[in-house]
Length: 476
Ligand SMILES: Cc1ncc(COP(=O)(O)O)c(C=O)c1O
Image 1: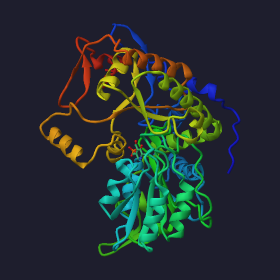
Image 2: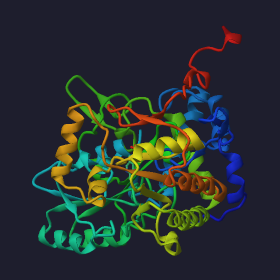
Image 3: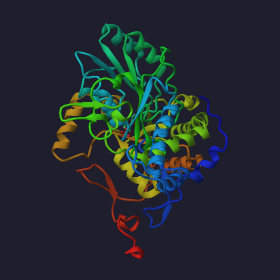
Image 4: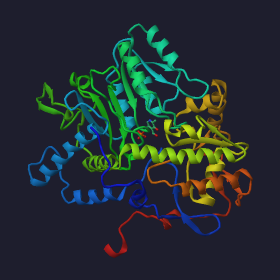
């Protein structure tokens, strides 16, 4: 299905982001507008989504159980949420199902527990987020696709592993895009290889879905994606919903993973008859509010056009890569060519030579009001490999943690862009990094050995001054 942009323009987006005007305290005693360059972790909510939720709350009621009018509306809308999510990734309305879950992590855990039979193999890659690695390790035998020296997946190794397995690989579970280097994987090519070897493919689209149009393609197409998982909080809908979208067949047989109310047709003391999908896999009262938010956000992204999203973020990425290349001591991990920014995501990880990643992230926040992420980004095997560290190095750091010290934990600093970020924000980041790389930052920073994080000496901020739980006095 094609989605032509009708009402929205990319330049309209910053005005639609909740909290973009929020000022945060900085070291010199003043405050600056916050710049969020941590969209790969979570994105802010958009005003039209929040507004729609406020309207929906007037209709909010129980789903799939009540007969009252509000329940009818809530049920009707909750069912539509599934359709919107299916359409967002080009799923098949007859052969696929949409199971609403909390996030990508839960979606992958759910799927992994459907693959726990016999001596079967799941192929992951060494690039994966822990959420697309540990659920498989817990349930099946996992093998890892090797990486090339540029951090991308070695397709030759994938081919070799599929050939060698002689039909024993059940599934290739691969990320659509890396949350560390921004590398986009050739998911349809991988699907074709997997299918030719009798395996299925699951794409972890936590990072890809907010930035590229995903099309699962027809089930009869060898390049078809069997399963896609995603998170609403990375899609401008931070209300605790994600989705597992894919082949109904996989979930039709047997008992659901989570059992309880709503998942059954009839229960006696000696028998249970499971209901049809997706209800069968959505036991308990669902997060209808989160579902509405995610669907609204997907509709808004469709309206804007995913090609527009991709083009905007590629422009920001090219600008950032050009700027980073000018700053001495900065080393970017993963692809660095600004000319090829359209081929990757706007997720860039780097180090400032000689400075701890913990310190760089702390200075960006305390002196410039810029939010980034640092560390290994829940992708330890990948970051260790990018840094050239081995099992022995990992063992050393494990011991250090046991001793209570995270002081020298390896890691990178990561910036990641969303639809609302601007060149002006990236210019501010680049200026800040130039100051840091020249050791011209103002504060004196102290490291907490237990967490590894740094804080500027003498800069005391009472977080309760900014947001506090509790009933406002005027209502008390
Ligand atoms: C590639 C990738 N996969 C999976 C996840 C897990 O997503 P969630 O925390 O929403 O479950 C993330 C989160 O950052 C991710 O980047």
